[in-house]
Length: 84
Image (cartoon, rainbow, N blue to C red; front, side, top):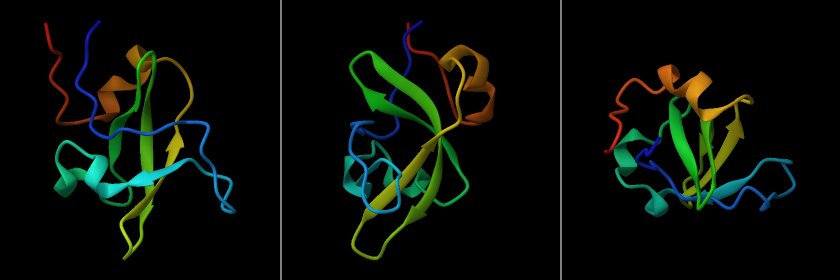
């Protein structure tokens, strides 16, 4: 299955919150990166559905992997359209 990634994140980056983080300008459409939204996040083969926890005034975005497989959780991402 090929999917469009909403926001690029390295899942190994964590700050003092204990959550992975990235910058809002790493998003394909920054307007979709709002607290509580579910997005497809990651890079390479490490792609997952994540919840946007917060977006700081400095553009830092914290994400929480919802757990489980991408396929199991893709329904949470309302705007998702598979890419052939």
